[in-house]
Image 1 (cartoon, helix red, strand yellow):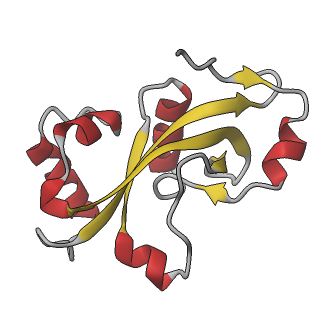
Image 2 (cartoon, one colour; image 1 turned 45 degrees about the horizontal axis):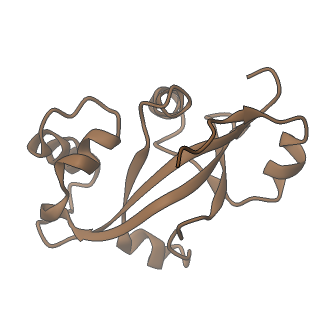
Length: 142
């Protein structure tokens, strides 16, 4: 069964405002680049440290959950749906996930190196949250 692609919806702002926020990457050029990749369908996954959820007292994402994806200006640019969530050790992230992050990682080793530059405290045993998603709605005119 094929799911329909994202559609521009006239009530986007009303729908989006009631959803929890998802922001990928640090505000600025990094987030702008990553959100462009999401909108282009290239980036369909992201990784977070499990410890960050506990520290921020945030629940883990759940399959089927909807989020308001925001850009660097905190403007809602899409509604995304979580399609898969896995907990893994940092050294157990697979090639599927590394590729789905849409950042050009040719190997899992390249994925690990890039993430260690962001999380220098990570070790092989660090628990990470692997989240996959799809864009389900866009603002009018998008």
